[in-house]
Length: 317
Image (cartoon, one colour):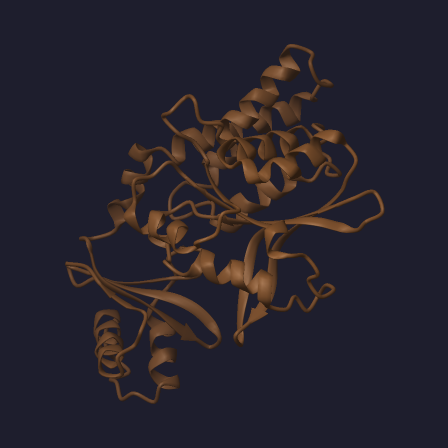
């Protein structure tokens, strides 16, 4: 039984937040996964291979002379907007003085791409305020960004990465058809191989099975073929999309060339659109027929956005 496959059946699917939670769990050596800091070392080895500016972090982790803190959904306030960092890793010396900070932005769907998101998140960490921790004292060259996606040729995904114009960034993949890439899937398989060869301490049967199940899930569900199957619920190509705020939460409204209207949350997950679209029209004080359809509400919103020259409207030709 593969619990990850089961949770992805029917209308259910593992969201980005759940995938981030698994990675965050494996990155923290203190958690009860039975692999100590093997995944942490392998992760930073991978990023240092992609960008040598990460070498100081890898060397610190590899030395064992460090303390670490791994947090999920860390909220930073910047320009009066909340920015939730998927995974934040703080690397400290033995005296708990912070030396490096790494933010990880995780994407498992092309449709979740947003040109400015990685840029905004990095800016929020560098210049914003985390109300739950002390003020940031690190220089910008000690703050790093990792973009984690499936192996994709999506121009939208690439644009999000390229928009963050800094040197201390890296792009890793969940999986890849390129066997030379050290992906998340391969990291897990490498750890299992090391355990098989007795290069690391034995992993108990339950955890070993879970690691295998997760690697299998990554390879199967994040492959190009499987992603194509998952998209079959979408009728037509995207014609127009925009980011809108509904009751202090950001959503992406999508118009497909079939006329279908969809709404996605910040994690790129489709949500029930009708009531949220009504809330948006109400908060913007727009007239609408309460017995209208989702398509009518969506078109009314796009007409309103066009009228006010909303900056986040993207039109695909």
